[in-house]
Figure 1 (cartoon, rainbow, N blue to C red):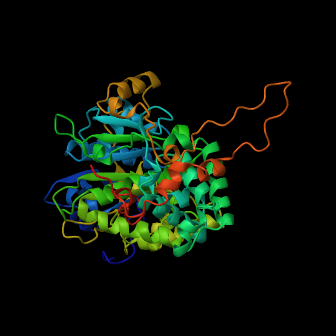
Figure 2: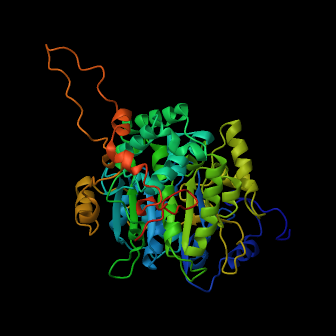
Length: 520
């Protein structure tokens, strides 16, 4: 039986020609430059510590995918990769969905299970904690508040969050265009509502006439969507001080890369919001960072958890923008790893750019599961394994791996038993987490929200309303001015409406996602 003939899957216990086959796969991972250690080869039911499976540091800006069913070890894989990147001076961003990754700041526990795994894969394990910053969207939860202004967030991402259709998304773009040219800063949701209210009034309707106008029906949908969005607590996410994504690129005094952990358990019921907010972070990095081409190591590696949420119900324009961003951000030294259950959760144009793959076990209990399994197998290069059988038989902490080698060619598919993380595999307690947040040098910069003058105030929409009648003295006046009337009747806005061409009227430059290019 030659090496080119069918070989039983790892873990099958069947006899094969493991020595030659294992050597062939292992040779594909024998890199000469710096590399991250993933684990050891599984072959013919045995773990081969003499055949390490690795990924070159230099190719981690070529992006990747970590996939697998719930409970198969994806979170530990993220932790393992983040630790080694930090050790090599590379900053890391992690989205922590369940709160399990906060333990990366503390040394792990030396127990029988960890020692057993280390012995199996030939790992010299020792406990270690890593420099970490803990962030939280809008300060909801335990972390330094991460906020963005509406202006910076932009119309394309906001339309995705509000679930607008293509026509409504285009109208939202016109609203942003108008606010940009008038110098009206959209800091939070009330600023955007004030501008929409004016543009649907008798006086404001003419402002957009020459570029398509804004229908009352579309404006009504946008306003209702904003109201529902705010009712879900989204107002906390928009405002100032806006988070500077350059703070994700820091290193610790000892040269290790900082691991920025975005704590998301408190907003798990807002999946569309946090997935879109992660895309804002990536888009902001994209248009702020300079081109550096391929280097010996990435400037940042960004792990995008629950990636399927980003692509659900996305418009074609949105998907195209994601594809371009992922393709082009590589040359700026940023690697993006999408984390999800199966490769089919990621559109083909994006999946084709993910050169490094760690695929944990899949389940095949239903016809849909079998279909997803077959689709996953088709995304891998030809291999010596029966991948359908292998992927349903992998244990926790095992995965099928293929990465880009130092020459850019894919490595052989390798069933791998993964190493154990060196930091704590689990969350730290709340008191310790809060202490780390308050002790961060970023805390003083971002903790306190600021509400400065912006579109809402400049349009006069904050003018106090006439108070309602006191009990026993009749109902409130029926002609009490609405938000629209307050905006329309504002002399401030009437003046601003004539200010096209002034210094305030300079339009903001926007990126692929419509996010605003800010001056650092």
